[in-house]
Length: 300
Length: 84
Image (cartoon, rainbow over all chains, first blue to last red; front, side, top):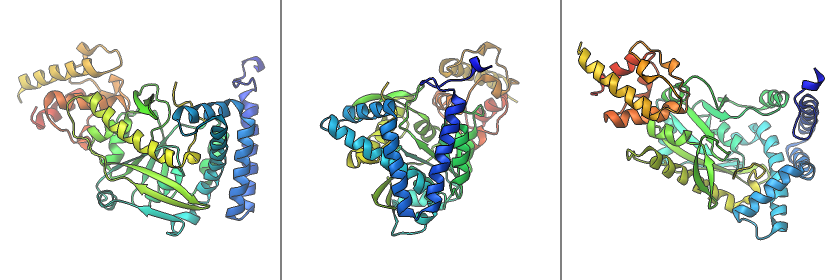
């Protein structure tokens, strides 16, 4: 059976790589548990730096994306942004696992919710679609929102099931749960929105079946789910940005409700909504490019 | 029961499904008793179809009612209840 073992792109048997990753994650968690929050963040940021140095293919993708987006003037600046973003992502993991320190502290988590969004949050009968990207700390945003209504976050399962299990077991989630991107039940999104829940989506991953929408001026295949749900279920839609302003301090901003009356042209309606969402994400990234997950092949 | 109306609505529904569904399917074989789950929609493709159905019939369906339907005939009945 050895000859049939699943192998990664670098030739490791996936089973061995997953085991190594799992123990690296356990080591990280050991440090997180042992240290006070500030030191745990530094520990996680250092691991982020280590990852940046070690994962050459991902580093090249990140630098290429940063240059393509035009948020760096040259390759040197792009490397600096990419390294800072890798450190940021390390701390995101720690903050997500220790989010209890943030969620109920208005000094640590400042929140700006417009009146029309607040009215939806306060109404148990109304569902809400919340869109964001891999920017700032999106996990903290989802967990904070779950104080109002149950939140279902659509997520792709991690490649490493051992690490996924570990991560899910460790995060304080309140009424926050993840649901798979693909599922044969056609009514599941409509049902949970009809039940007055929040559906949280990150719209900045390459979507094979999506449509081309400009992202930093370049066409990027973008998921249509959020836009279609808004148009079909007539569920209110908002964009969330949870940016770090200092260590263990965040600012969560929800946009006023994004509304698009139906024109009868499905593609035009979807594209208009997705353009708005991409523009909002782009603006957040331009402001803090070192808080974005650049190592994903967004433009293919 | 206005069976002629139901039949006409089913024909129009079949046409919309044929136009907007991504998956290949024998749409002529779809009858009132056909289970919706056999049509091959997932949670994303169903949204495209619902948009097109609402545009074709000029109505707005309540998603809570839509997710309760189990057969094509129940969808037809829902369309008729909403004025199709």
